[in-house]
Length: 222
Ligand SMILES: N[C@@H](CCC(=O)N[C@@H](CS)C(=O)NCC(=O)O)C(=O)O
Image 1: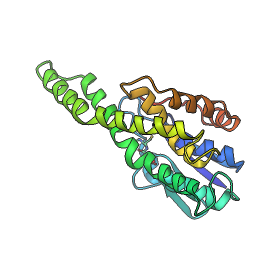
Image 2: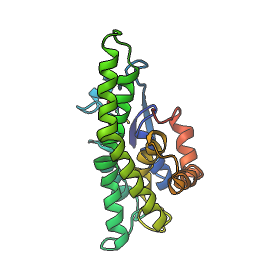
Image 3: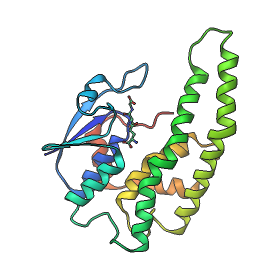
């Protein structure tokens, strides 16, 4: 049996959703973020040395990293579903977005989250203007321009076809769901009709709803 090591409000929600899309049975082992730091609890370190979620275990296998987990589940349990055939333009786009999500989109989004926290963190009054000045410089000079460019790229690509890899829903859409949610929430430009339509379409899927029911609390951190 596949076990998903599931942290509340986290990327592991994507894995529950993928398993629901594939109709593959699984168990959930739950972990709760620390209310103050938002970090995963130390019990996750006993499952994988990085102590992050998602991780899946199946028999002797322990596998971390969303993209690797998605590829494994689709290959091992998918029976050809949710992946375009090899050597097709759709498959190349599929691979691109599968990597793009964590390789390019998430790093500036995580930086934005961290620097938003720095701005609001309790600190001695004399340190506050310095911390805020640094946060605002990093966000304005690096983070926000990158987020804008990534969002422009995604917005344009979602105007080319209904889903990321073409006109069929694939596991790349599952992988891209997390950055698109975060880009809509943390981006400066709110005029993103294609990204918003993408989110409406995924939220309406029966498998997405089932995963939410099983996973429990899920919201994207701001
Ligand atoms: N690139 C990794 C990122 C894993 C990751 O950072 N997970 C977050 C949850 S969204 C986490 O476990 N955060 C808690 C912590 O770092 O303690 C993946 O896609 O699996």
